[in-house]
Amino acid sequence: GKPVTDETVILDAAPALKARLLANENPFGPSPAAKKAIQETLDTSYQYAFMQLSTLSGKIAAYEGINQSNIMLNSGSSALLLAAAIHYSKGGKSIITGDPSYDDLPTSALRNGGKWVKVPLTKDYKLDLDAMEAKVDDNTGLVYICNPNNPTGTVVDTDKLKAFCERVSKKTMVFVDEAYIDYLPDPQATTLIGGVKAGQNIIVARTFSKLYGFAGLRCGYIVAQPDTIHALSIYTGGAFNLSATTIAAAIAGYRETDFLQDALKKTIASREFLYATLKKEGYEYIPSSANFVMFPLKMDGAKFVGEMMKRGVGIRNWKLNGADWCRVSIGRMDEMEAFADAFKQLS
Ligand code: PLP
Image (tube, rainbow, N blue to C red):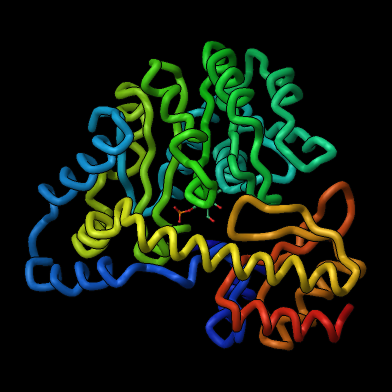
């Protein structure tokens, strides 16, 4: 099991919260069709879901215009981040990431004996691609690009990232984590899957946990060259760790446009409400392209999290450039109102 950390304690308290805004989940999902598919699958859930797994990867391949041999599914993208962390940090190799960025992959690399090279964000809180490229050397195992970036919610320029991947993938593996890409106006125009199609040495990670609302159902995948997938597959136990129910839900929910658009609309409405709340209380924030928003605090971060928790609101704190910041995940409107009520008492 995971060691007990402050974070574990916060998550354990989460069921009692009025507003659960701490793990970038999407309370507008999963869709009715996905839930119905789960129920309908129960009777045949004694069977291994070989065929269904292939149906799901076939749907993804068709939509993205790639081959099924370019896709590896698993129970959430975390397992695939872990596989990449183990493989590419082997022998003390280093992982280059933004700072702050999603730290799961580099943290696993450290535990595997690898190194972590942290590159500060630009002054507008974006990944500094030039600075990251400049850090690539003979000991680099992988460059981790989280776009949109968690926890800042910023995106890098698409053309710039495409050019970056083309150049840097000639020297080292580039991992593009697109967990939040479904929140962008045009994911198809922003994804780096085209780089895989062009034969580049990159890995693109996707998940159903965010806009699809599947965080507890667990379904994610990577898109990469077949030899990369082969190399990583030995760490993941294959795709048999996806349940038949989850696979059925993912097949039913994949590219379910009306539902996804509706979830996106509700997320944007809640995000606008949060922006207005912060403005009214005299706070700044980083405009976000995802389902979370980061803003600078005027008190100690841990104290703020504790005080909000006492008021039934779960959020998280971060250090950015040595200062205390808060990250609020976007929830239902009633949750954003609960955040606003508690926040007014503290600001
Ligand atoms: N990547 C990023 C950037 C995330 O923020 C998260 C979860 O919050 C994950 C990956 C892991 O998601 P999952 O394992 O649910 O697919």
